[in-house]
Length: 176
Length: 115
Image (tube, rainbow over all chains, first blue to last red; front, top):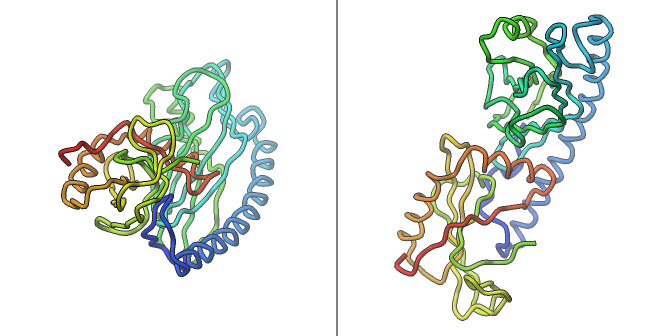
């Protein structure tokens, strides 16, 4: 995935030339097309999540992992994916956390490698609705981007959850 | 919509351009002087300096607009401020940029007269 004009030398409130305006429009049009493609992918992913939920009763709730007993769970409620001009992919997620594990364990994996921190930055403690974001550079070519549930704690309960290694969604390919 | 604030550093997403970039606004451009309430016409040319960074906080761009044509001083000020940008600042900005691609945030950091 490569923008027509990946480098733009302007910042907000700059006066732009006609060429720069055209380049900005070209980038926006490209992004609109790509985001449309990703949205289609997300629709397919939702059906995958439903099948996971129903095929593993007691382990998943609303596409989240239930750790065990009264441990609670984290449920993904929505997700958006975007690209910026500098070739950076941004994954933004909203999720619900219950009482057990107050830190998000949602992370993004690019081609099998974890990128960035866990998605827990916007609000950092307590149960309830949360939002998180991670951004990372992505180059032209085919990539697999996954949102995974991967706790980092070494407690025994969480280790079990980590071993379950849930893959929440996959963008099959991003091809320039 | 933010106004042009003189001497105040701002945080934005990376532009993808390496090194310092400079633009000039003509005198008369509506700007907000430091500590002023209202917009006023700039009394001279306004220089805009911007530079991309990649630090432990992530990738981002810092920019500033000033009457000074001293590029080295502006770049030094940007470099210094970049080291203080936190990961939380970058991620919070990016969460807004998803909805508003040209959203940026002014920092509580200013170029000084000496710069």
